[in-house]
Amino acid sequence: TGTRNAARALGTPETFGTVAVGRRADLVLLSADPRVDLAHAQRPLGVMVRGRWWPRAALDARLAEIEARQAQ
Image (cartoon, rainbow, N blue to C red; front, side, top):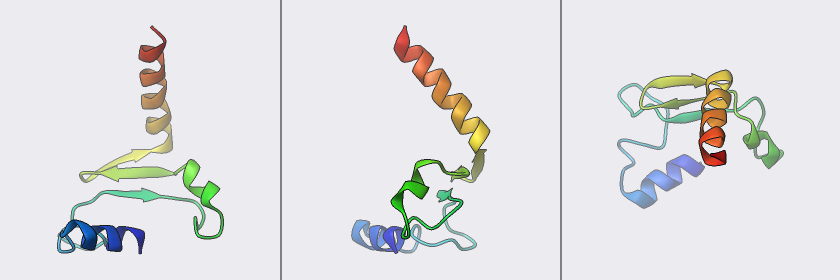
């Protein structure tokens, strides 16, 4: 509902907000329901960005790269 309502608010419900064929593939995959405990959203299993899958290991590696650059 959070993504569907956000898409409606942005005026793009035909493109975003639900997972369906022909829609833009941006989503976060969680291991548990964040409605039960919001902490479940803190460590996603992976994300789909513009149709490209980023598993947890790739996310961790990218975050480490960003952190290393910031430390310089």
